[in-house]
Image (cartoon, rainbow, N blue to C red; front, side, top):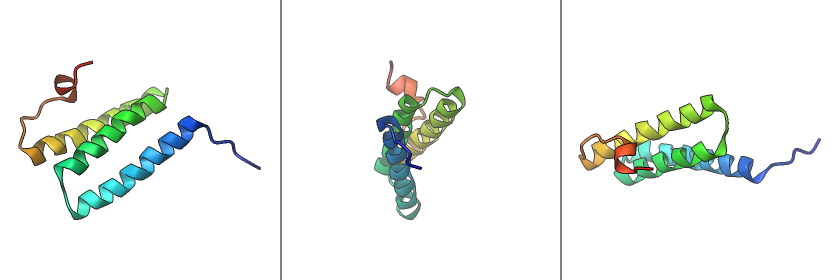
Length: 86
């Protein structure tokens, strides 16, 4: 059986794989840049799913990594919505 992979599925899988590698790298050498990339990738994943439970998970993960970025940069803990208004 051949499974057709849509571009959206491919993009989601690519972002998840990238985040796996970035998290591993962060665990060995924490940096604000890596935390920001991971947070951004989770924000991009928000556009890849219509399921509210999955969107909520990506939002929580993005916020968690954003907070890690703020700590690394010694910034006040602003929410992403304060920093990136819609």
